[in-house]
Length: 235
Length: 130
Image (cartoon, rainbow over all chains, first blue to last red; front, side, top):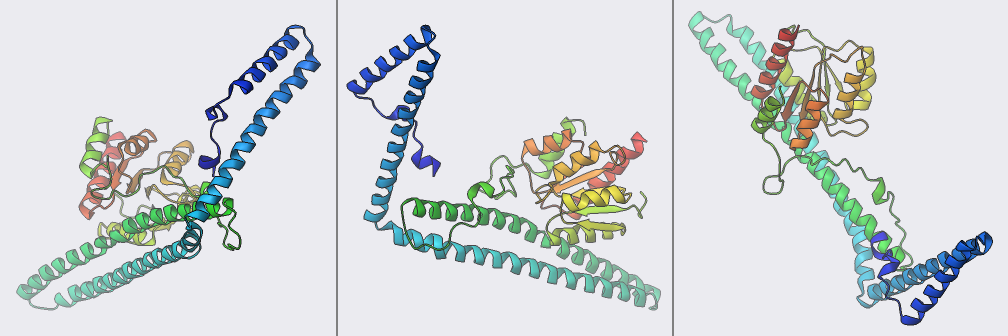
């Protein structure tokens, strides 16, 4: 909520009377300081700071009231409650399901690739019993089969990359959800049961860019860029 | 290179660990152990005479760059070669890894050819330095 309720007190325009009263207070404070009246200085200084804080609190209270009435007038509360309370958690569960499905599918593919590789090794053994010309042909075919199986396994890399991107989107969505819930609480919305389990600050902020997404990512290096960069650094 | 060398593969995605293990297997390396992040890899490295580390960067617990820095900071295992295999492709990251003493840097998605190239290059460098 900091972004909403913490304007610098300096941004509040002062009227002439406030200005004059503050100036006279400051002159009195300076007089206390110069006459080494420490007790009076401390008390007057505290008074000044307190009145300053009270001004800030009044400002925060006014902003909260304005936020509350804006939410009520725009009838946003029900919409936001639906979004933060049900729709966003639902979207997160769906993304989580996509993660699990792709992971299972990738592992299933890798299981089958490994089984097929074993069969290919058995075939290679059997081929040794064939006459030399046929054996050579079988060995060549088997070699091509194994190359394809290896590429098939490698193609499952997508699961790591898409998984990383989905995790990032889930973190972002969770942040939006927490922010909406905080907004609703601040606006005095009653009866909302689901409070944010984890505040935004607790979400991992790795500062890393993550997998490059074509058309969206800027500054992502290719393997060739990386090789050239490392070479320039003496690698 | 000694095909029996003990290799530790560190990645939080089980799919990727399996793929790297398979690719290393295709290249003849079969003495492979897996860890799912730097935090679980660290005690294994402390305990177990690993000859080579392949690590991801972005992982919960302890990241790959922290793991790399810890390895370089521990005299007993400081010389273990480390190959970073990561989706992090920003220049700053590559430079940071280089400064932390990485031996090779592969950007995901990668191919078997790239993995072989980098391994060959690392072992060639190590042989020259020896």
